[in-house]
Length: 217
Image (cartoon, rainbow, N blue to C red; front, side, top):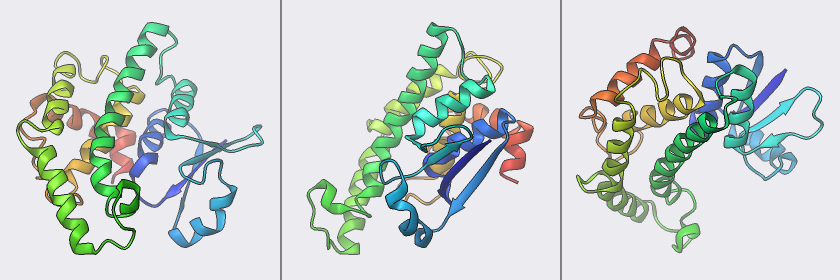
């Protein structure tokens, strides 16, 4: 039995949840609030979530990418062929690169001192910085569109990234696209994906997987 622990948001755990659901892997999806987090933080491997406990393994496992690959291997959503696995790893890393670009604008509102700003930076100043960062990302020549063009091209031949069946790469990208459409990222237009036909088709294909549809119902 796998126990996955994360906050009650999509975030870094969502790709793992999707892999577990699509792969029909027995698991427990443990969702905690931030008060509960304060009580368990010191018992996590790196002071962060998500965290996975597996029957037969004494120590919990952290790092979302490592957990995702483990689940992928358990559920046949990650190939045994080394070259095919390499391509999947490349795609997952691409998703992580895109999320990292967006993440700076998120974490500036949580821990501005990480980026050289005062820890007591005012909310108004945080929003000004976030607005600049996100508008730069969303410009026609910004990094976000450069990446989205690449992703759209990679989806030009198949129903999913590598064929007619989903892999952990597909599980990684759907939460990213949901984030972009969510409206939670101020100053990023929620229709930013609409011009990318292949991405839109991919979203529909993923949402039509019965386990994914049920997960979000």
